[in-house]
Image (cartoon, rainbow, N blue to C red; front, side, top):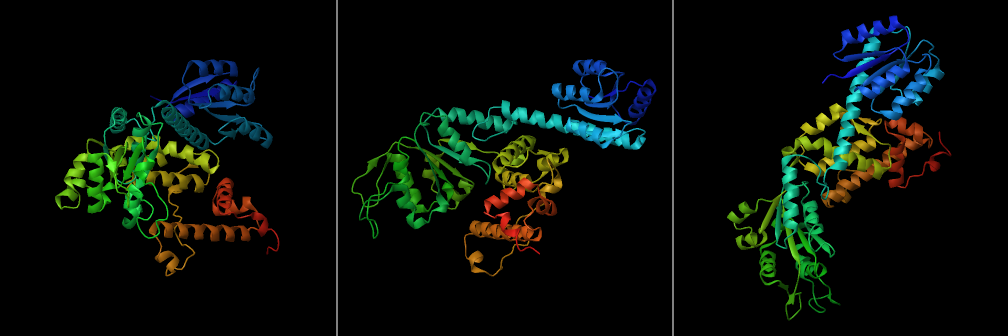
Length: 467
């Protein structure tokens, strides 16, 4: 369907000239009106994308007309024309919501280019509005956003499984939301009012994982000065989520199997077993069938866990949902970071939808959050995703603080060091002037203020003794 341009001017010769110029240059439908009241009737009765209106018109001037349009249909993009090109008139029209203005006599090529950009801007406004409405209207379960068939199947499966009390095995690649699926099964089930306890199996050293799972009694080992309940006891009456179950050792696999079979546990140092009432949900990004074939995962445990199974889709399987997901993350990031509201350009959304997201939703969320911080203005372009906060970190590459630390902790430390030194240098250079510092760094002022709050950097300390 063609876009439509409404031209409003009380001078008949100018109206016909503009109709020929724009109609002959662009593939759009053209509507014309010689006064603002007639133009408003067209706006109310037809779909108009861009309005090109003169400021000086009888009965109702262009600024009044502009205010009425923006009050009724804010997505219509308005360009104002004036032969009285004072800066006051131009500023006033922009304040009232005009997209741009042009003074008469104008360059024909410049005007066509301006209308072309306005049409593109209108498409973007409509697309973002539709995406935002879809996010509000659709049934969102635990952060699963989308309208693709795989997401619909996932939602339906979660709802059905939640009504049972059976054990569930969730599989899927890293970053696909297996933990969100587990939480929704719990929240939609009969145990929703009781505890949901999550355990990341690889994150706990194997030497203490057994005591974390099953607890211990006083005197069970050196240093056991009191009883401690394990996560099975903590989750009593609720749900225990065992994440990355494929990394459990053979010994713990055997003990977990007995728990699933007998519905009871024995804390370390205890002499009798204890009955438990816990729903088990397990998740893994590993190929358990392959691990079973080489003897690394017990078949009997697999079949005990796999009463119901769910697979969370990778982003490459739902590319049509990526714009929805990205817009959801962007709105959340802007709110969390307290930065001005932003939106994606059409090219940025296309880039997001075609990128290979190895880290899936988690990687996409991180990229969107970084773009929300470092975008140069409210419209996020593809280039705004090129920032890499780990570039040129101010750290000694041989420093054991980094090399001997956990990978994630080391990476986080390098990022923090870079941020602090960069912001400190920036504020020192600009004598504590946050506005000038942000502009020089290509950041929004709110983004720089967010980073300053995060690292407790006060601009006041750079305002005295500056060069």
